[in-house]
Image 1 (cartoon, helix red, strand yellow):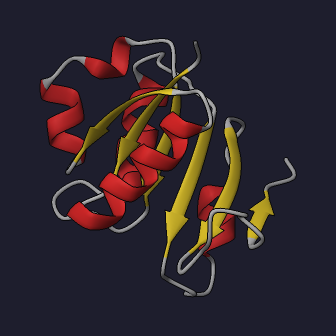
Image 2 (cartoon, helix red, strand yellow):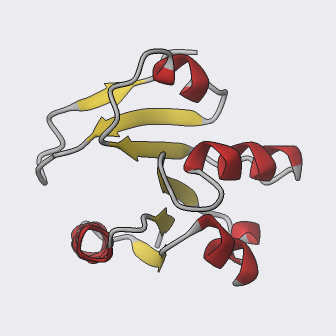
Length: 116
């Protein structure tokens, strides 16, 4: 079973995404912050990351950079409600798979692939 590490500070969205991913056949570990993921030691796991861009404390972007620098390069899907300029450029790293803009549905019709 493929594993997903999900980080989003919105409790209801985190639970809903975890359920959706589990129904799709993924093993999911969900965290409310970047710090919680790091403290649990979950970053060492072989998994795909689903990270909210705007987290309290370390942002999803900061978490991704720290993991990459530590050699924990993982395929990553970013989720965001932000439409700020330059965000796509910030997220265009070698292991970023896509950006999913909130609000979204289970069909994931607003998935934006990142071409590197």
